[in-house]
Length: 275
Image (cartoon, rainbow, N blue to C red; front, side, top):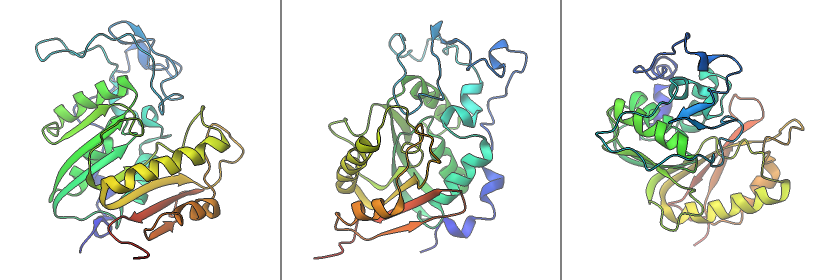
């Protein structure tokens, strides 16, 4: 089966900032220290969106607008800036997606994907652009209501909203989640200001226990091996992660890739290690 690995040469040139949005440099909210402006949706003050992107940001937004209501006043930077979804720049975002997906997705035919911590749902557009022969159905779970609102606009403007959507909610605490061919956890386990060294292992084990029975083919996780002493980043040292994965009766592989201190875990959920 041909996979995404065969398309490595075209990937960096295909994934570009959302073409329907342009940064308006004259907008005072676009300043370096603007923190994406204090007023993001209908006058609601939301701060430290990058620092808190893993967890819900408390907002006082009314019910989501109906089709005949005007678009919310969301700064354009929220639609195109990679920092909004936890990456230092667009190249870092592309490199992370490449590391996670090369060789792990089919390049033709129907494909259902679930993403845990979907942010804006960028991965749906990435797959659609780099794998045009894939008939993608995508469901993302994102607890940040602001990013869910952004994702709805983006998927609609990219003509992906018919088969792709981001659901407002936390995957782990959602009672009924989608079953899909592939489940992705790309950046949700990299950064957190709220998870301790002890709770991180409880969290990821619970996450695996929930993802495995809801994944028909493959689970892909991107993790950090060493956080360099910065407790804002979650490190899952490879030896400890291997011990955890051995608790589950499925073959897995670990790939260090090309990004410093980051690695990919790929779990084959359709195969049992022991009968």
